[in-house]
Amino acid sequence: MFNIRVYGILINDNKDILVSDEYIKGNYFTKFCGGGLQIGEGTIDCVLREFKEEMNLSIEVLQHFYTTDFYQASAFHASQQLISIYYLVKPLEEITVPIKENPFDFDAEQLKTYESTQQIESFRFIPWENLSEDIMTFPIDKKVVQLLKNKI
Image (cartoon, rainbow, N blue to C red; front, side):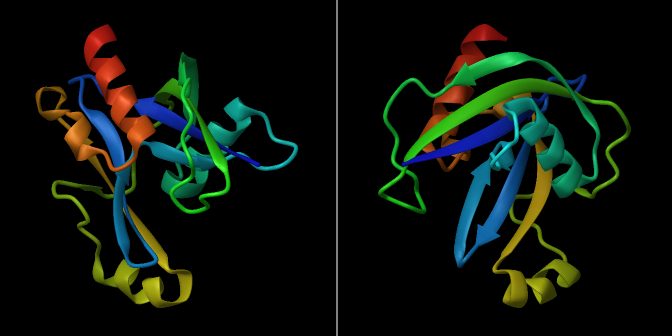
């Protein structure tokens, strides 16, 4: 079985990279923004939807950047093979969600909702010079960081 994930790589004018810090079912993760492809949805539609849902942000997809080219089991479902697709994206409007300075900087309201949702997230920009694969949690995101550092 395959688990298809679609992510947007948003780089601001200062070359800072947007990441999502998430706390899901008692575990901390830092990853690119995006999520799971739904039945009947195209990959570009997926990344557009994910940014709208997670950040209330309209984006434009600039170009395909990378699709997983090695075997990776899903971190949440070991019987599923993960395929991740990454696009370079840009915002079409000002980012209005809080952008945090520190990882996993959740506010009191988010922490209250954790009990019912079992997940919360915050967003931050990582300065280009500080971007390293060590920041990212998942193996495919780590590879994407390496590719970004070599291509951009």
